[in-house]
Image (cartoon, rainbow, N blue to C red; front, side, top):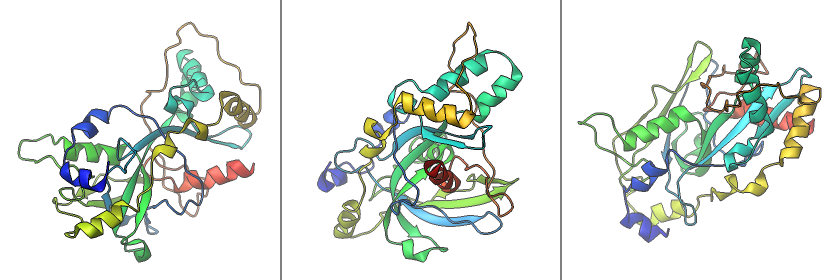
Amino acid sequence: MSFADLKAKANDMSALVGAAGTGTQEKKSYGDDRMWKPTVDKAGNGYAVIRFLPAVEGDDLPWAKYWDHFFQGPTGQWYVEKSLTTIGKDDPVSEMNSKLWNTGIEADKDLARKRKRRLHYVSNIYVVSDPENPENEGKVFLYTYGAKIFEKIMDSMQPKFQDETPVNPFDMWKGANFKMKIANVAGYRNYDRSEFAPAEALNADDNVLEGIYNKQYALSEFTDPSSFKSYSELNLKLTRVLGEEVKMPAVEDDAPFNDAPAMSDPVATAADPVARADSDNDDTMSYFAKLAAEA
């Protein structure tokens, strides 16, 4: 929609709430300077203030949603690929995971858990405060985040208690800044203390807001089928990573595994250069995506 239409529909969240349970999406490359990432200190703690921005003209929603797989095979190679299930197609890893899970063998289930899909969201953001990287302040970026932050977004639009007022965090006039508080809890990045500030306009000047709006990036690329590898390409990659021909376990029950419980991943430390990325931060994932591409 146009900027004028956007203001006319300020704080309208009905379409967003209705769409939250559906979706598809992604395309992100290592070293993409459009992407903003929060910085943490040596203790694994970090703080920043961002503002989620509304959908640009041509996009239906202010977020894109996609799945990927991220795991290391017995060959030592990494499988870092978007899942075709994002765009409603069969995916070789998801098929293998379903077969492994349905054998009923605990060792097979453990493999399926380690290779399960990961959920990501992408939105345009405006960086209000980035103490570790002040040069980012006042700029528009893309930000990839996980289910925990998305849950906080939905809680803002659909509060659970009667004394709380629904707020559309993507609204430029009646939305709210997001205070990102990252803590290192038992070796994992934790966003539980992150919260939305009281609702207020991002800026009192509509000309400034329009300038910010016009600097946003279209999210359609994250759902474009052309950005996904084909089934045969992914299957070949899976074969190389596993070091053998991909063979599906023979089972009668073919129920899908994709909705297995999510798992968190440890924060990378200097002593652990190959730690897996957590669901709300893709620093390590981007690094290994580069390694996988070079391989």
